[in-house]
Structures are given as C-alpha cells and as structure tokens.
Length: 398
Image 1 (cartoon, rainbow, N blue to C red):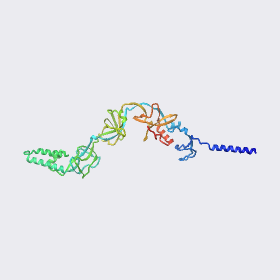
Image 2: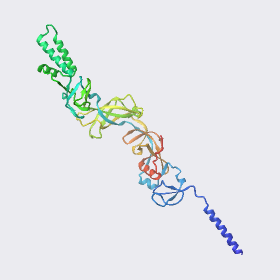
Image 3: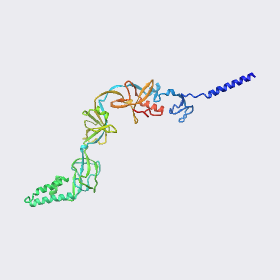
Image 4: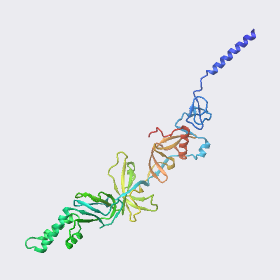
C-alpha cells in the first residue's frame, strides 16, 4: 500500500514538471531567420518561406544597432575593406564643369522679306543645308515691288527724254532707286534693271550671309508679310560652351582666369579661352548659374549639342576631403560609411562640394577624426542591402 502511494505521488510531481515546462514563456530575445534571406524573421523554428531552408536562431540583442552592419575578419579581407581618418586637404586648384556646345547667338542671321508678296520659288528647302553668301534664296511676286520697279524705269525714261529743264528727274530717279534698295533689291539688280528695261513679275532675293539653315519658316506658294521671316542661318565657325555652375561654386571660381575646354566625343581637341559671360540670374529651383566660353570651330568638327568639359582654375582651399571612391552616389543622395566599432560600420549622408582629381570635398556630415571606409564602400553597401533587405539611405535626411 505504501509503495502504491509513493508511486502516485511521483507521477503527480512529474506531471507538474511537464506542465511547467510546457507553459514556460518563450525567450523574447530569440528569433529565427534565414542565412540566405535575412529579411525573413519568425518567432519559432521552421523553414524559410522563400528558399525552404531551415531557419537558424538569432538574438535581437546582437542586432540592436539596426542601421549598422558588422563584418567578420574574413569578410573584411575578401571585400578589401580599408578605412582612413578624414582630415583637411587642399581642394580646388581647378573646377571641372559639365557644358554643352550651343550656337553663337551673335552669328545667327535672320533672312526676312522687306516687302509683302508670294514666295513663288524657294531654292533651299531643308533644315541643315549650307547657304553661301550671295546664294539665291527665293523668288518673290510682289505687286508693290513691281510697281516700284515700273516707277524707277519711268523716271529713267523721263530723265532721258526731258533732262532736268523743268523737273529735277535726277531726284525722282534717286528716290525710286532708294525705295528698291529699302525693299531688298541689290545695287547690282537695280543696275541690271536700268540696263535691260525688263521689270519682270518675279524678283529674286539673295543671301547676305553664309551659314547653316536652323529654321525654315515659309514654303513655296505661301504669302509673306512685310518683315516676315523666311529662314535663319547660323555660322558655325564659332560656338559657345555653356556650363552650369552651382551658386556655392561661384565664389571659388576665378572669373578672370583661363578656361580649358575638352570634348569627350572628339578626343585630342582642346581649346584655351576665357569666361566671356556670366548670367546675372541664378535659377530659383536648381540654384544653378550659367557661364559661357567662346570656342573656335574653324575645322567644323564641333557641332551644337555636343557635350564638353570646362576646366577653370580656382583658388585652393583647405577643407575636409575624401577619396572619390569613398563616396556613394545614387538617386537618394550622397553617403559614406564610417566605422563605429570593431568591424562595425554605419552609413551616413554627406554633402559634397568641389572635386579635384581623385578627391572630393565634404562640406557637411563628417567631423575631423571620423574613420571612413575609403575602399570597398560599394561592396559594404551591397552587403548591408543583402542582409537587411533595404537600402541604408532610405529615410535618411541631411
């Protein structure tokens, strides 16, 4: 009897221990994740819903720095991760600006009709065609011009018949001739009209400039008003390299200094010049100013729209600087990785300034003495995205 009582008490104690074990609370510091898909986090063991691998336990206390990443010694070596302490350096003995070649607006000529009429014949019909000086552009039918030619011939005839006995026909001839000149006829055309006495119904007009047609505003058969534009010609013997300058860079640029212009599409060609124009207005939206450098184009190899680089000498300035490879640039902004502990790193936003060869100015975001990743920054960034499943720059603000 005593044996059965002892056995019953033992069974009751064992059942109580089992219930206590079953109701033991789960460790709140423990979670389960996948080594291949670290964005997966579960509160119990199982398989990864993505790759079906067994989940491995991890502790939240080891991940209290969610915006940081910790690497092993092997990862540091394989990723070629190297750091350096940011310090002051001389930046800014020259400024590199992106530019675009444009037409020299001082060498654009508008060919217009000085008298109203109908364009009967147009000799150049395509944009981009080259027009030489003196080339025949169009034939115009104009009642007013035809009447003026008849008046000129009549004044010549009366002068020949009557001389200047009663009326000074010389003044009438001169007045009729001036009208023809004002309406666009050349002196050679007027002399030919006086010689052959044939006014004709059509009057040819010739180009007073040379260049490429950039716009064609009329077609054959169209009527044109007095002063109406027929076409525009651009002389490409000289172009403008127009560069954009941020307002923060203006104080560092020597506006009287020498500029060197290079062309990535035409290697081997470069010109030296000076800044000829600085826009008096800064764009409110972009905070960008415009400067202009004149570029000779005697060989005609350069074309409007081509990209160019304008290198301008500037005053050197001591400032915080980093190697260019240490800075990560994307659509969200500019950032660097700094070391916060032993093999632990954090991504922070920075504001960059001028660049000089292989170094870039850091205007804000870092302090002297910060330890910055100068080699392997992009690999470190990729490792963070792989482990955390998110870009370290998301949600960050300067």
